[in-house]
Amino acid sequence: MGYPFVQPQALTQPPSYRPYPKVDVTLFKQSAQSIKQLVHESNLLLNKLTDNSDFAFRLMTAAQAANHREVERLVRSTGIPRKAIISFTPDVFRIELRTTTANAECCKLAISLRWR
Image (cartoon, rainbow, N blue to C red; front, side, top):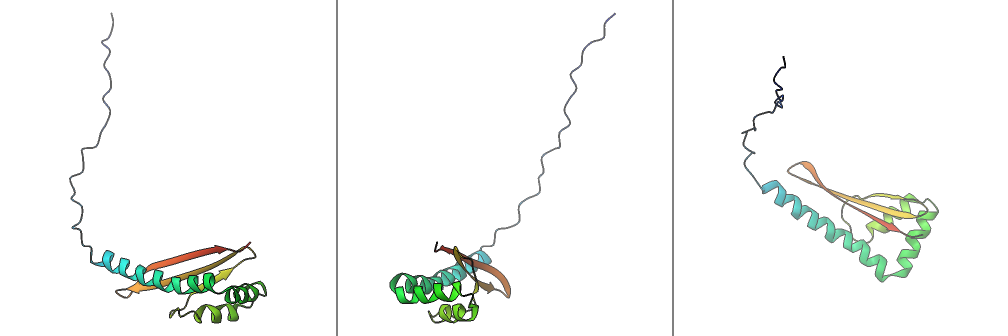
């Protein structure tokens, strides 16, 4: 006497019908505007580096000598109005610019430039 073979049914969850929250682009647009400002400010440094070999030489020399204060002074001399987070290694110069929107940190722009 045989038993009938029954295929077990897979347990599935019913689909979730929770709606997504209503889309509000206000903060998203403010963040995009903030990034545009950071890009503009970073271009001040990048233009100085590409247009002025003496400036690039002084920045690299100060960084290689681990003269962080002089590196910061040179970066600020380009016209970047905010405090930048600067780091460097023997191979790379890094700068990070941050901004806030609605009293909260919203945006950061990080640039890494190889020099070796």
